[in-house]
Length: 473
Picture (cartoon, rainbow, N blue to C red):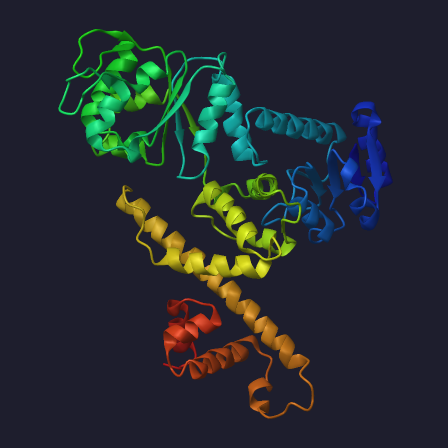
């Protein structure tokens, strides 16, 4: 059933008429809609009379992420859309119905691939998976560590014509350079010191199936040449052997590096690069796929409930909002670790906003002082450093703003009897209050600026800027 929240009855009637079997219901009361979500297969929000997203829309987007949401609006002014697809007014009813159908199909395809999310980036990646899975062409998956590249590789295997065939994952970065050749090709007894018996390599083990070479960019140049020969000739020999063996496998490779740049720098063979990326699938970092955060968080929470045998685990709405503000440098892997860790250590079993805010500030502070990831061009490294600094500054400013707002509220409603320090609150100007807070923190920390920054919940660099701003050096 598609729910339609609107005060425009004529528009709602047109939309219901366009729906299959007229499966639609009209709502103009938020409370009634909130109490009926269990039966909703999709919701249309008419936001033409809403200057900002309604609280209910925000609640559904964060807390019921598996319900498709479409919105119509007078003008597009959403810094972070709280819906799956939007239509500027005037909107065509048939286009809206078609959009619901496309969202439903995208999510069904995601589910069939064993993937969780609702972002257009993930949907685009899965569309490519569905197109190439039935063939035997090589696929290169790019994206940062922890973004879910292995899941895409497994989806290609599971959607192939032989889903029951072997799927063998090899993390090249985790292997010592000296053993990579033996691991891939295998070796004969006596091929080298310590080779006391024949070893069957990955190329043989994966016969008829898929080899997933993760972190392919770490493979040594001399092994790159041999891998290229295998892909071209479809045969290989074990180390120390001379009998050709048929290479009957499909190769799916993944990397978090810029292989095109590695090619230009001579670190990766150009011919192998083009042989690998017959089809390329890019999986962006989680910070660029914020629409996937809530579905993934609830999915991991469900898994955790099964593991612990508890239904008392949960995520507070405030914490979920903070999830969408955090930049998730560890991507999906970090999100899963947060769910597992917090549900284990929290006494209530619920992830609270205050707990995650502390985690967010600590990790932002730590990551802002780490060196930029290596193996980038100088320009890319500089851009990454600037981005990290901006993210850190943004989070620190937001934290300080919240602290000031709390102090302002306390100042407005302080009881008349408390007049020992009237000078502290004779102004409710934000800058004046900020100066008071900084001065007080320095006094409480006995002049220790590092401790003062910790008391304020900001970084030392931000504190120094405040000291210069208010002449408190």
